[in-house]
Image 1 (tube, one colour):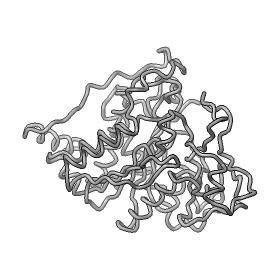
Image 2 (image 1 turned 90 degrees about the horizontal axis):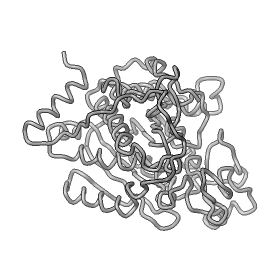
Image 3 (image 1 turned 60 degrees about the vertical axis):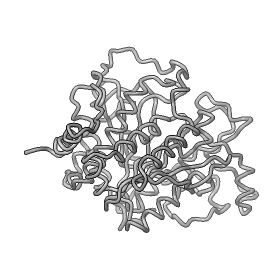
Image 4 (image 1 turned 180 degrees about the horizontal axis):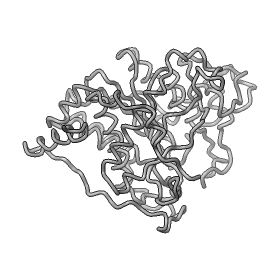
Length: 400
């Protein structure tokens, strides 16, 4: 009997024989922990990443080349006036939202998303079959101002926040406001915020002065156009499809983490846990979301990605670990959307631009794309919903 992955691959192989293409590069071997790992090789090769103008051109070309298959629209505008695009492919009942580059120095996800859109929009039996089963909406480079500055935070002052929300006059600035040095970037003359703490599970929330400065374990405020754009896309998609089945947020982490046994350098960490279960004592403050929260689905989605990457055997794609658990981060999109009923997944590949530049760029892009593909295929053929959620606990932990 064919496994899920072999069924999908046999379909893809048929596409190749019919004249299509299937790019599966030979994976590199696992990198042992005895190999040297430098946490700071410098920001080299930055020009090899897709910048904002190049992303716009790539998405426009896809929409023009695949009319009626890929839909691209401007979903919002950043604080500095740059377009935030969303791209959509597929018409199936299983609905997936993917975002990348909320931190502007974490660029792998954007290039992986563009590559995935090309694969899913191709005129192959594999792509057509998957498009009939899933609807994918992607918001690549959702923090374009930070991305163009090649830094974590956006480009926005507290004064601009108060200008847009006069009710916040006199409030303390948000706790995640950068005005000093962070990850090697000087925000003193050009402040910004960590947009990844600006979400709120109350999708209708209006900022209130009494909720500032806040903390990492309290919801955010939707004070930034970047987070409001993602929220609005999520809300519209949920209304249209009756919910968003999966939300995946693509990130980077430090480059030199070992797996739990100390044997190999970690290529990517994943997670489906961002807030305590609303049905538990620790999650009692989220009790109003208890009927929607579905941790089992989040765990199944993570296992699907893990299995897909492990299927490549003893390779860098197999060095996948769990991101630290027992989190309480309702101000992240992952925490907020989990409380709204979506299965959620964090991808954290190794090495941000300030530490690694474009080192291992191709390998890391492939890791993200193959993990995303495992999720889409599992949702598409239904096998993801048959995964035992407790297998999530078998994913190796990360030494930190």
